[in-house]
Length: 168
Image (tube, rainbow, N blue to C red):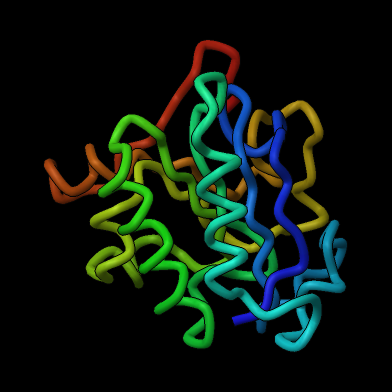
């Protein structure tokens, strides 16, 4: 798996100060995507043990709330095994750090994958330029959902992660 960058202090892609991993490769290719260079699976660098070490060191700061994985798309078959291993490793080391995943795919089609055993929240759905709304928290278009994965696993249905400032 390739990745384009690791942000060690991100305040845009989930609550609090987070570490973000931008993976490479996306077949959705949404018009208006803010990160089209990550559509290419060969863009950026190979994710290695050194990359994992950098990620873990960045997460090991008391003010870091957790990890966000986006890109590209973490659920692409080329990315999924490594993203799953990263998330599993992080949850094993520190279950208090939340993990958010952004994907253009829908949760219902992937809810049974192993990755979601190690994820707290998924922001799902393709970015739709005609539904773009910059006032939405943690997502770009109105069709995208912020799903509380742990709650959804308990109830067996989609449970939205909602904050007081959200517009739904």
